[in-house]
Amino acid sequence: MHMMFPKDFIWGAATSAYQIEGAAQEDGRGLSIWDVFCRKPGAVWQGKSGDIACDHYHCWREDISLMKGLGLQAYRFSIAWPRVLPQGKGPVNKKGLDFYDRLVDGLLAAGITPYVTLFHWDYPQALHELGGWLNRDSSDWFAGYAEVVVSRLSDRVQNWLTLNEPQIFVGFGYQDGTHAPGERLELPQVLQIAHNVLLAHGKAVQTIRGRARVKPCIGYALSVNPVAVPATDSTADIRAARRAFFTNTKQVWTNNSWWTDPVVFGRYPEDGCRLLAKDLSPVSGDDMKIISQPLDFLGLNVYFGELYRSGADGAPGKIPFASGHERTSFDWPVVPESLYWAAKFYAERYALPVIIAENGMSSRDSVESANKVHDPQRINFLHRYLRELKRACSDGIDVRGYFLWSLMDNFEWAAGYRERFGIVYVDYPTQQRILKDSALWYREVITSNGATI
Ligand code: FCB
Image 1 (cartoon, protein in one colour):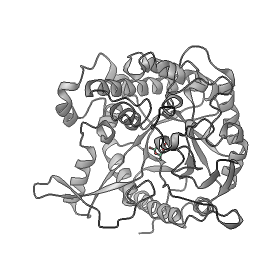
Image 2: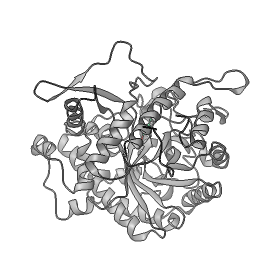
Image 3: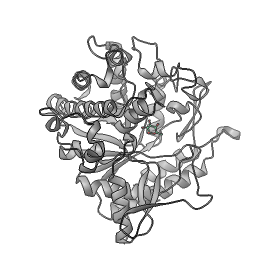
């Protein structure tokens, strides 16, 4: 069969506020937990922070011109909650909100559709000091913030994502302590946080639906890594991989169904309830109803996978990679089929349209002569991953769009500036942007609607 992307497929790129904006002390922005975490000795590679990052807060016009030049149809960015509400709730910082207003206008003028993520990890420090996500009021705080943003931008913004990768900011932030706020809580508290986060998602969906001036299209972005990929196309291996993919563990960041079943089906998955029974608090009142507000799409952030084969009893068995299996500079294994199977398994289980909300790779890029950045390894990576996405579309899986992570090199959380994920190179000391070869390659992909893949 001739493989194709749908005609109205959306080609975009993604970033997030703390990773690119900088201007951390400007125009009344409040502190986020990442500002504080970055100052803890040893928390971030080389002790760096997002204080300046890509200085996008000042360079946004130039950045929009770059996007336009690349032919991007859509841009996924996040709003910094403490820039809009310095204390997390209460008085609105007009200057902070104005920034996003200008950004949205600039994008629309350039013909680029904004996809707004409300929360991409930069939690207000002031709310953290009130107990943060562990406080049951946290979902109302989030809904209040959503209301401020939606009231201002929803006459022009139609596409919204509530949370980015809840399993990562909860799992890394509160269970293994490697991300802000760097806590290592006991399982009952982690599960309580997870529940409050899901509740916040549900209340934000209600707020967006209730307040938006243009009919909204609402999703939620999940980290699905590692994707469980069947080692062969046999029915038994596919079944085994699916089972591995949706099985829950005590490490909340590896759980897929725990974070999505409540949102779509209004209940926690049974295997997880059994495993976590003694650590779970009873769910109160209408919580599950609030959590499971109708959604328009699921956003999947896909980076890597692992291979599964069915054991004699049908149980999934993980297969080690062959010696020398390729890896990105982050040491993430390159498994292009992850994109196919993540889209397929999610679309089948949840019967919702899927958007790939992030996909890309980090490498040790460098500037060569004549301001060129040659990154054939990234082109190779993207080509093979996108071929798998094309296969998914051709198989009839409802994939609506693809957002490359990332538009530009940026602050990669605990890895600081070590990992370069951009298709645009950023020379941090001068803030010069240089299109990498992969950016020019991606432009062709977009222009041809993926025919070059
Ligand atoms: C995802 C995050 C994103 C970026 C990429 C590499 O987990 O959502 O901010 O760090 O990984």
